[in-house]
Image (cartoon, rainbow, N blue to C red; front, side, top):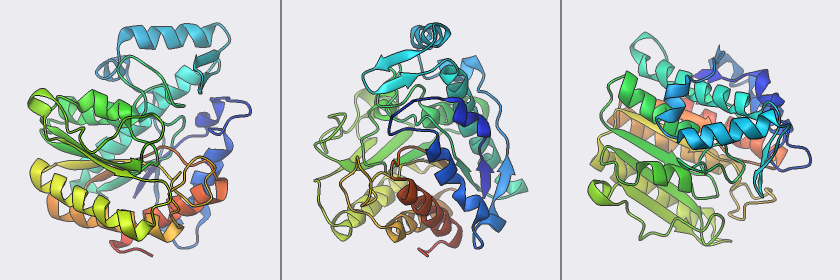
Length: 314
């Protein structure tokens, strides 16, 4: 598996905040795993080109964040910190997602799976708004890159963060060529993600939401997620699956409330691998989203990668 990350993600300084630099160390604990470190193929990202970010986000958003950073930083919204180097780091995170997508797209020359271990997260960022700890929507930027630069015509995005990826849904709401599957606690932040939200215009039917009530046992909702992924893959016939990999559904997470154990993230990885093997030559591009209990994040990443690599949960 291509493993794309950088120490520069630590330069996004958030102070006393759930999305803190220590999260990167936890996600990267896998690099010293006796079992999994040997499957990781390290790769160093470069910042995303401005035009790649503008394929998803408005120039007004990019400029407003740049001004906030240049002024010494502040809040982009009540939850979202911008420090002096945060916009630089967000461009690097988007670039990491692009590199992961390119490495997976070149699977004929190597491994068809890639993971971008980045921060800040991205799936709440809409075309016009930074929110929910997110500045740019890295998965959406990578998806647009695959379509514009790699000529891919059909994609599937899977999101298992405990929060609904409202930004990703907004980006692809009317896009008939990108299907979006999200399982998430509902009702919960940011308020979107009802099952009736199915896309709009010529994109009607390409959004697949799996809302889950707080406290629902994993065995009661993971099969619903797996069924939605399988159905969406049959409908989309994707050339690549992109994953917003959030680990805040862990039972220990202070924000979550969906009670997953690390082995459950292994089950998710294994299911995505099985669908990808059937649908798109095994191409899976995963990008880190949430996960705010440090031990839960570390163990979740290891279990998920183990599931992806083995095709069965560890």
